[in-house]
Image (cartoon, rainbow, N blue to C red; front, side):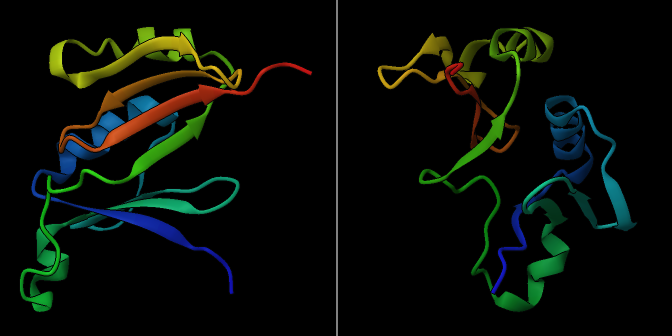
Length: 123
């Protein structure tokens, strides 16, 4: 078995895709109008319009998550945080060195999901 992706179901696909394009520095692949994805080493991050899960009878709901971090390892946490220019409720944690040595900044995406931009300590 191989881990393939995490998918975020969203009611404003273009807004969410634009946010993650800024986070990743990549242009999203758009194989179909209600779907986008970001590839790279490891698993993919997929973003899908609510129409893609309509047959699931309400099992998926946008902006309802309070239990998952979406994490990106970056070279420069402070620079990535500054480039995003988050403000107000979008900022969960400004760039901080964690007790275990990682540098992290936590922000919310347009649906309120927590995104962790982090780097590991050198050495």
